[in-house]
Amino acid sequence: MADNYHQSVNQHYGQPDLKAKVLAALQNAGKNIDALTRDDLKAFDEFHFGGIVETRNLAELADLKSEIQLLDVGSGLGGPARTLAAEFGCHVTGLDLTEEFCQAAEMLTERVGLADRITFQQGNALDMPFEDNHFDVVWTQFTGMNIEDKPLLYSQIRRVLKNGGILAIHEVMAGSVHDLHYPVFWTNNPALNYLRSPQDIRQLLTERGFEAVAWKDLTKHSAEMFHGLIERANQTEPPPLGLNIFISDSLPQKTANVLRNLEENRISVIQAVFKLSK
Ligand SMILES: C[S@@+](CC[C@H](N)C(=O)[O-])C[C@H]1O[C@@H](n2cnc3c(N)ncnc32)[C@H](O)[C@@H]1O
Image 1 (tube, helix red, strand yellow):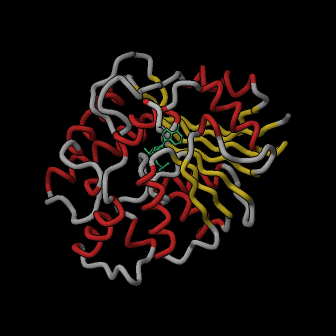
Image 2 (cartoon, helix red, strand yellow):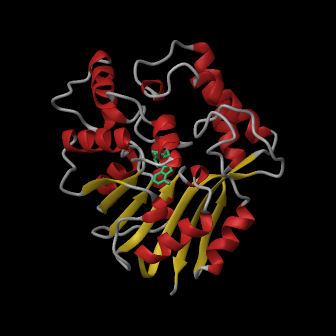
């Protein structure tokens, strides 16, 4: 039986028949669902600010090598995992708490022919179902915001990462002003919003043996990007494929609130790479 936290995360991100909904949306948009490509999925399968562009940027910042074992914590629909496997040659394990996301991620990965390089496992980042010292890289994008116990999260990451391994992070952290405008993409209300300041995150990681090798503040850049996004959305009809497949009615409101939160210093956006010495 799932606990309350598990249920809240699944309720926020998951929905019944997500696999069928995704396939129907692809078909309605004129894609051949029997011969899907990664390009067909690009409008919705990377669920973080900046999409595939920021996945590639972080992969370069982390200097990913081919054939490494990489764990993606909070792998969502698997877009980042597929990018890292197809473009950087990584072997990826995706871990996510939302069952429907794991099932849809697996289905899309099979259909684009990457199942030999990527596996998805349903589970909690706070209790990772992996052996100690297993991965060369732990990767996480836009997931930490839902996780309250960050000391435990980083201890779990440290446990499964090899000595000398790399942690690559891309996520929303707290800004200087507290209280957000809701709903936002990662939660509809203060429950499930567990932002910590960039300084806190850095300190928690340093205390666990992680040394920062790269740190990029993308807050201003993200605000500019959201401005452009909203301007374009106001001028055109909604595209047939987009995040609206799984975020239904509140997408415009979430987008506007994220921009307000960015502009009012309520949230910040950080990409960072750390090296672990145990
Ligand atoms: C905003 S989505 C990001 C998905 C993906 N990283 C991406 O960038 O496309 C956040 C994901 O974190 C997952 N998540 C939240 N809390 C989690 C936890 N404690 N353990 C594992 N996954 C979690 C959610 O189920 C959701 O799929």
